[in-house]
Amino acid sequence: MRQQTSAIARLQSLPSVFRGADLTVRFQWTSKAASQYLYLWKRRGLVRGLGGHSDVYVNLLTHPNPDWAQALLAAMPTAVVIGIESLRQAGWTTQVPQRPAVAINAKQPVYSIDPYEVMVRDAKWFELARAGIISDHAKGLPVLKPAWALADMLRDQGWGKCGLWPDDIEWSETTGQDEQDWQTACSAFDLPANQLQNNAQDPRGHCVR
Image (cartoon, rainbow, N blue to C red; front, side):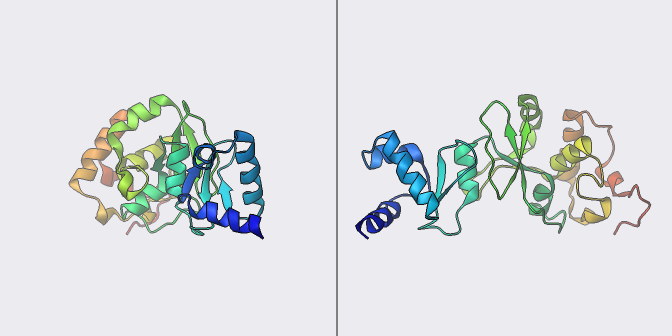
């Protein structure tokens, strides 16, 4: 019982997201002791780590619904929301991905994290997409602008395979700034130059709202 109380007290003193290495400093433990405690805490469902050897953990005792975005950034700071989730956040679609996709720079270690679909992109992609990334960690993960995300999806997979068809897009939500972003994204991703609204023509011949 004393051990259980001790574990709870220790976890209550830890933040919602922490690194295993933090335990050696906070509790004056050896690395081996910290690993043993983390193993026991994981078995009891008190903490959960990201896949692999990220050394990043979420504190399920104090935060049963953890901030996975914070954990993701702690483990993989280059993370950028892309794909359907980018369009959903901008109001371009009501489609909700089963797992939001995030791009991770291949230059850094990559770990799995259940709430997200982790997609590795090379450093060149990040250079090309830099102008399209909105980064405000106070509001969560950096996100690719919707026009850029759409250009990236069409270049990589095309309509249908990317999970969306033109009639899934709320074209009335697009603005003049989105058109400018689209043109810049097409140039960066080497896509044929056309107007953003031209994509509203469904290749299946369906009527687009």
